[in-house]
Amino acid sequence: MSVEIGFYGIAALLVLLALRVPVALSMIIVSLVGITVMFGWSTAIGMLSSTPYEFIAKWTLSAVPMFLLMGFVCFHTGLTSGLFNAAKVVFRWLPGGVAISSIFASSGFAAVSGSSVACAAAMGRIAIPEMVKGGYKPSFACGTIAAGGTIGALIPPSILMIVYGVFAQVSITQVFLGGISIGLLTAVSYSIVILLVSWLRPDIVPRQATDARNISAKQALIEIWPVMALGLLVFGGLFSGFFTATEAGAVGAAGAIIIGLVLRRLDKKAMKTALLETLSTTSGLLIIGVGASMFTLFLSLSGLAGYITGAVTGWEPSYLQLMLVVVLIYLFLGLFMEPFGAMLVTLPVLLPVFELYDVSLIWFGVLLVKLLEIGMITPPVGMNIFVIKGVAGQYASLVDIFKGVTTFLIADIVVVALVIFFPEIVLFLTGS
Image 1 (tube, one colour):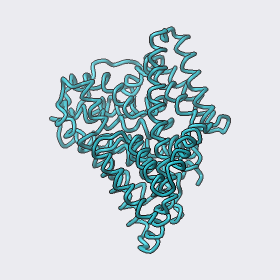
Image 2: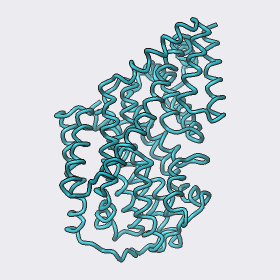
Image 3: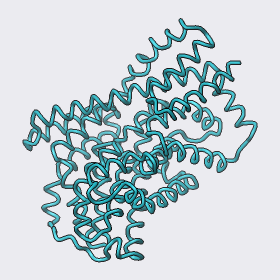
Image 4: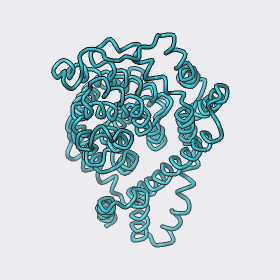
């Protein structure tokens, strides 16, 4: 009977999500009702009173607001504004060099952001007008930045990876290391797409460099030294083992504030905005985490998680069959759910299955974030598409932007396939 209640709970959750009830509230409602049916109202209320503290009072989670604060301070003080110009110094000689520069500038912004949406918004304001002026088809220019924004959640510090590490109880530093590989592979794959489009369709991407704002390497270095110094401090300490992920976040936030003050770019208005955005984003993420913790407890008490694990064992799918199912699940969820909700709704069911198959949870975490980020550029609710529409809507419609991102989705599928067939792509830096 309890297992049946678990199935009813999942069905009810899907209905609530289809009705556009917030993810956190949906999981809390289903968990409360399900545990009340199984064990009574007092047990359900006891869970509601204890779970928020048990989830939030984790030292590792304090890295989330710290890395968010670092990214927002860097953004609002303009410390990342020179990344695009610096990338152009390296790539402007290539066909489609301005677009390729925007991809690698997004990778640089990712190192101080951790947010796909923030990355797309920042690069969209800078790069899209320049690409359109240089002869790029507007829909492709917008699609390039929307896709490039997804790198923001792949290259550390990734907020998605931090939450995954806490939930799956694996090393966040190890997941970060794996994220570097897949983030750079994604950037390279997008650059190849741009080169191919430039070669096959010069009416979409000009073959010759048209950037008139040539700057010297010295000027570019002067513009980006604050970000380089901050990245060296944070990730040098993190990956050398001198900092934990939590300490690295605190050092990064403090470093961004100090650099902003020294350069006289951080005023009261910018600091207040950064703090408010950090508080708003953090609280939203934590309430989803609380809902996911309650939902995990509900599934465990119902026996559904064990039932599903037993069913998979009886089915005995091969590794590739299992991965195909997982990929299809996340590509489907990405059509209508935001990444944190999709991740935390599914992990309670999938983690026991992957442990049964002895799949590296570090590898799976990196692949999972990649799959979730594909959902950021797929219709009908791809968040990055709407962000680009907001910052550059005068250049292309929503439909045109979705069309412009199509070729990059093909590159994403290729990257996912490579990571599945060759897990070493992710694991070679982690030493796993």
